[in-house]
Every structure is written in structure tokens, then in C-alpha cells.
View (cartoon, rainbow, N blue to C red):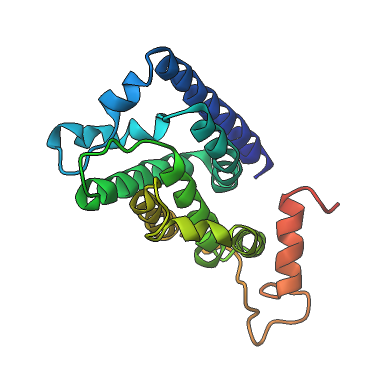
Length: 218
């Protein structure tokens, strides 16, 4: 898992570098890329742009506000496996983009990585429950408690914000946690009733195993 965490760090670093490089090119063209490759609801010609819209932003303030959460939640989503993370990213981009394309009102170009952010957030919060990993469950609880305020922009009411893209991304992240769950069984969160103290299936031994995987125990 440590090796996957290293990969996750460099993948997210590289992803952010690409997003900022695109922003630089977009800014140099007076945000022509956002106008040309943004997602417009109901417009069949822009449907393929659901894969490019997450890379584009409308301003430097827009990309700055997205970069921190994108890296944090992206890393937490990727450290269990980069291949799984790439599948999740594709799924979230599609659910977020399709929600905007189907339900957004007016001919407005929608761009930004916030749909991915909400998808990664939803994935991180529930992944531990589906994978039955104690560490991931604890991370999910902490992230849910620390960033619950984000859900206020996944519902109607915030002007200038594509709440539909946020909601679609969030739903995609939760679905992704189920689709890409660990089918090898994981480690049980609840102890088996007949398990001896400290034996397999005991929460304490499971936690020790998780911490050992992280290199935090000898």
C-alpha cells in the first residue's frame, strides 16, 4: 500500500500539473478553451466535452479554489490503487457531466474540476464500508465530519455554482465505491462472535494489521 500511495502522490501531482498547464493555455486564449470545450446542456455536439470540461476553469480564482481539495481527495481516493482510481475518475466525470447535460437549464458552458472533487469525496467517505477496511472507514468518518459543509453546494441555492455537477459527481463517487470495491473480502469491521481475543476477525488485530500495512508498527 505504501508503494501505491507513492504512485497516488505522483499521479495527483501530474494531474494538477496538467490542469494548471491547460489553465495557462486557456488564459492565454482569453478562456476560449472553456467556451469551445465546456459542457452545454442538451447540446449533442458538446456531449464528448464531459471528459474535457473537468480540466478547464473560468479564472485563476476558480482553479485555485479547486486545486487543494482536488489533490487531497484525489490522493485519498488513489492510494489504495491507481488503476481503480482511473476507473473511478472516468465514472465520476461521466455521472457529473451527464447530470449537467441532462438537467442544467439554459445554454451555459459548464467547466471545472469540482465534479471530480465531489466524486472523490463521496468515494472516500463510503469506501471503507464497502471494502471493510478499518483505516479507510476511519478516514471516511474524519473526512465526512471535516468537509460536510461541502454538501451545501450540492443542492440548489448557491448562485453561479453548478450544484448539479457537484451532485452528479457525489453520486458517481458513492456508486464507484460499490463498483470498485475490494472483492477479495477485506478485513472484517465487526468481530466474529466465536473469535478469540486478538485472533482473526478481532477489531484490534485487524487494526494492527492495517497499521502494519502502513508501516506504523514493527
